Image (cartoon, rainbow, N blue to C red; front, top):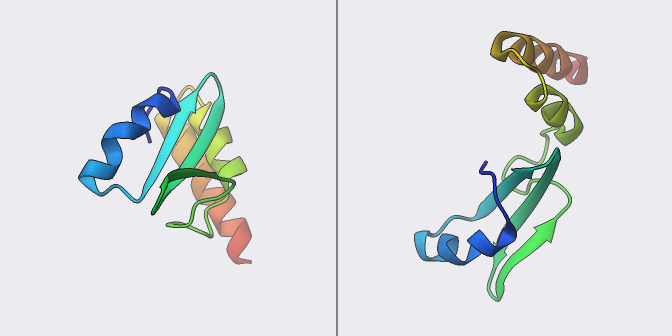
Length: 80
């Protein structure tokens, strides 16, 4: 994941990056590489089972440990 704007997408196809995530101003945007370039997507194609709303909540935590605990808790709830 990177911060910044979709303008930065131009450099990623050259590196063969299949999916790019941007976090900016509390918003998470995902893009997946297609033949014609990057297309904005609603959920990850690389990690289809990832709960993006849970990830967004965890990113906003002030503490890495609290974020990790929330992520583990949230992932555990999905399994049950």
